Image (cartoon, rainbow, N blue to C red; front, side):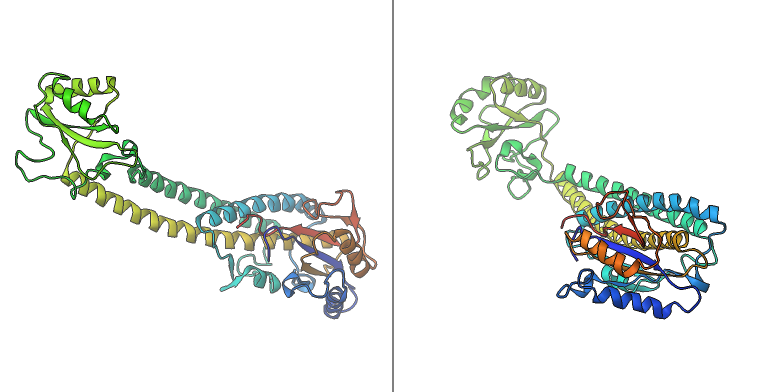
Length: 402
């Protein structure tokens, strides 16, 4: 099925004097044989299929007629709320995994979404029919809200790990001026033997300053660096070979007394020479490398954890959403067709662009003796004032491009 594909759930009243099973089968056969509702050549994934909402002796509990009226508004609000949460979970899941596999786990079985829809049944374990619709709805909304909150919290934690990783990550770039020197001056390019010929020397009085020279400025720098400030050690400027970037910028080090370092850096900046605040440490590099690897591992583990959470949360939210649809079909059918509850409900994907023709065909098949009622306002984009002689709800399971 495609992203943005819309499904309609429709229901029609059945005779109350006789068994409704054969009547429901007759409705389904009529829907399947109608070329407008089920055009030849369209895949079996478009329906129609039974949407087996409990009715008759196994129907849902609602109490009084006044409760039904209140449930109409409560269910519509809950439908909208779960719709929003479900599609937010869908979006986040796709962002985490562009190849996300949307499967529904229900009643100890995991199925692709369409397979779940084709064989939908009321989940008695989660929403027992001995409990009223209102109580089931209250529980359902509470569970979905907690799923949403947990997903938000875990995502925030995951984003914190990603931010920490980003702060410690290598700043890759063509220019040495924009890179972190800890990733340029690494143990494999720096000479440290504990002798006076080391690239970096740090003592109680001596320090090493790293400067970046633009292409063609090295001779001018070498002629003047010893006199930029006092206490610069003569002949101490040394270039790090093989580290020039594509723009010709090169890395050098200069030795001086610690007391001269800040003044030296200030004068370099005034002459538009880049003097970097950097202190080489072999142990520091290894610790940073280990920290990066640890964060990388943490981010991967968090990614899998959050991905699994969204997969499960989306599944549970979808199960909740389909049950809200079933509750709405039940309530609307009882209000439309009367007591005892006896109706047939079906689900299918209408052919895009054929809504008017499909509505007419549905009225011909399902509207015999039916009382006209309003369509679902979230439905097929028609005028909200339009009425049909059958119950009608619409929903779009997926709306995130991928």
